[in-house]
Length: 454
Image (cartoon, rainbow, N blue to C red; front, side, top):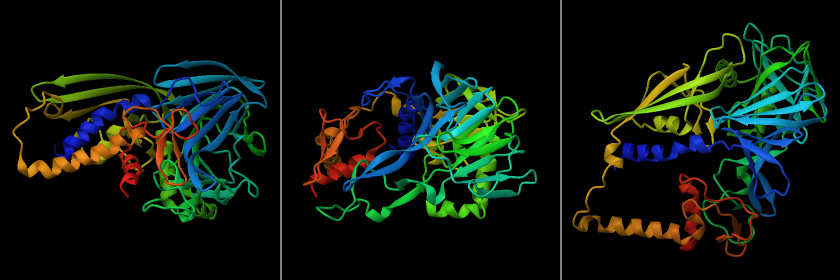
């Protein structure tokens, strides 16, 4: 199989991840409370009176180990106290309604977008509330395009033009989170005890920041910082719609670098904000897909038609592309789109880059799949030249399958034996994270199986 065939094979299997990338309403098996969680492409929402937002990408230290952790964006509220009212789901997007003293709040999260959409008729709307912390810094452009920066504690945010521009918030050195660029499950980072090559060292962990982009339908009249509710925006009338999105997606930024932005926002960050502000003016709510196969040309064509919620009047529609299809195209797979595919500035999600086509609908085609999904070719006679390769492949497969926690499609958990650093399947001890959720996690599987012979 050539490299395009392999990419296409992986893509066609993993396109189901667009369907699996967002959960409907579900109850976490590891929670004893009735907390509900719903996931989009990047952000997760839990019910905590008001909606409480988190996203993956951080790490936490536990004794000598690094473990996956969530970056807590905190609650979004329209009053001091709130409670969940109702919820609806199309299978693509989920809308949750919360009731409060100042009016209802609706939050929509979709597998089509790395952002969330908030809509309320209340005159007050707060973000980054407890258990999160309000961000320290802000940046926003003027009508002429010049970007102003400041800190909420020492300078006033100009709010009068936020209905036509954007707002970027971040923590800088005030961040209390850490991250690493290493792919990992549980890593021992201290120097005591046995160590293996390729395991991250203590200095691979950095203070992390997750800058957030905000887009307002209506300009707020005031903004204040409240220790419990976070950033509180006041409006002269109904607040309307607000879109919130991590401007770098799942990719953590170095807090030492973002701390410098308060003096002058880097040009590439400003361009990124301008580009995504143009895309977020209409929020993708639903999609209808039709599939056609042309046998003569051996071509499969998917047509995607989208439904949008307008956030700003006259905003251009950008139809999202399945993250795995965008990744396959980025890696050189022969996929044809009916319009230009926008991948820049690159925004990472756990499932691939967030790409889009500037249209309300588009089609994309893949040719030559019959070779890979038709009848398997008959096995020929043994070839002496291929025997060494067959032996090596069988050996590598055995090493993966013998490590029981790597069995495909098994939702297992791991613990680490501090004496031998062996990863074991622990069905009765569900304290560790799941180690096999996607077949694409081969890099982790391979590292974990390395322990057997080394």
